[in-house]
Amino acid sequence: MKEFTQFLKNNHNNITEILANDNIKFNFIPPYTPHFGGLWEAGVKSCKYHIRRVIGNANLTYEEFSTILAQIEAVLNSRPMHPLSADPTDLLPLSPSLFLIGRPLTAPATPDLTATASHRLSRYDRVEQMRQHFWRRWSTEYISELQTRTKWKTRREELAPNTLVLIKEDNLPPLKWRLGRILHTFPGKDGVSRVADIKTATGTVRRAFTRICPLLPQENDTSLEAGASKVGGIC
Image (cartoon, rainbow, N blue to C red; front, top):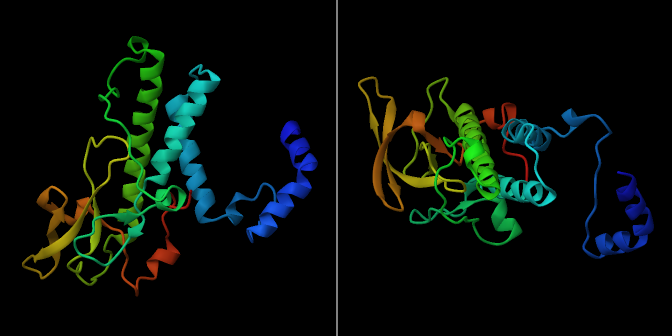
């Protein structure tokens, strides 16, 4: 912290000039008041919660620690947030990575190491195992929060055709989100639909609503503001 404070002091004029040229203005919240940050601070809290439990007391070198943090950053910035377009054939969602690098984030294929004893792994595979554990924990929580804010508690309108949805799938690799567009729903005897056919990049699948997370809430849904996702505010 001392070195960072000295850096800001020595480069204050240059930083101010660059920010002014790019029309960048910072608004700070008071110290020790994360509740002022609301959505994004809740996202930071969720991220830190899983990092502490994944890394634990592991002794990592600087390169290993910076690598796992960069990989976790990629996981967070790969999350789907909103449909990119209304085109029914477009399965690409809006994600933080599109703002940062202009394209979705990808990662090379790796074997599943989550069930392997850590003492049997090399240093490289140990870092990869941490990434996979973080992905499994954090993505599950993110999907659960999407379901919390869209789950029916009263009678609501049906999912409209062509709605972009996130499909909850088990054992997907890191940075892999399965997305699709609603084709049609199947109402039950009580008139309430609980199953839908979904068009994905690999074909049509049928899933129950419990495994479907709409990315675009209804326009008249005020629950989004009242109970917004706790893990959707970090970039």
